[in-house]
Image (tube, rainbow, N blue to C red):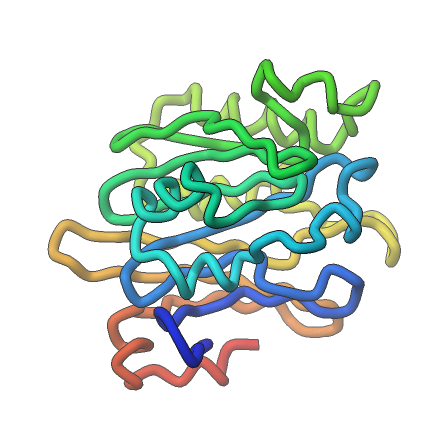
Length: 228
């Protein structure tokens, strides 16, 4: 739980252990959820993010998708090459970013299913994908399309089930292979309550899952130090 000197409090899924230390996903006290995904490796370089706005700042600064997008259109923040998905209690949006702060809104909807992996999907940025596109990213994209084609109601139970699909939850075939470290699922209910469903699979520790009531966290009634 981060309490900035200015702005909204937020819960941060924070990565350590490499040069990309920082918030990769989060939800703030107003209900804005942000998750990020890396661009292809040739664009995923620290130099391209110099002077750009990080995810933690976005969570502390904006209360809604609409506010964040209005600020983006007003050039109040910029991102390096990556993919960002935002959601709140009213809508969801998928964004793709390139060099020099160029971006496209891939899709924005009040009712729907948005997905992304680690390669560009918009016509504007397809040319920046490597040739061939990384097999893992292609496989995960194809697999989530197959799952969504089953036309199940995408409730919490199904979402959590999808997140543990063997293609989407990468185990890592060697100590140096890319593996999945967590799932981050937020449910905003019509009665105004919100819950974070979190699975942590930190290296060297047993995999653990948590059901975290967000109102209790922001009221100081839930101790996040137990999450590890």
